[in-house]
Amino acid sequence: MGLLTQLLTLPLAPVRGTVWVLDQVLLTAEREYYDPAPVRAELAALERQLLDGSIGPDEFDSREDELLDRLEWLEAHRQRLRTDS
Image (cartoon, rainbow, N blue to C red; front, side, top):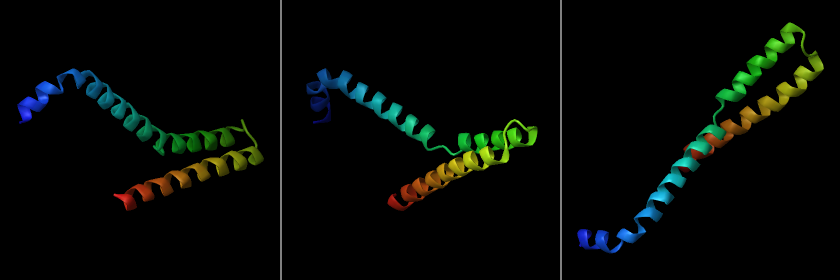
């Protein structure tokens, strides 16, 4: 029956291929969006700017709080994914 099913659904092959590609794009986009590495790199760059004198302590504190909140949110999201699996 597998061969017959494949023959009958052959006209749908381009649709299945497109759906697969879209799924892969979505998975890659989600992986990149929820990756904490860019936020950590931004925190390191922010600290370098503070040490260089490019930004003041007030601006550093404000931006650092935003980035740490983002990291906390990402970690909470990762925990939810582990719990749901």
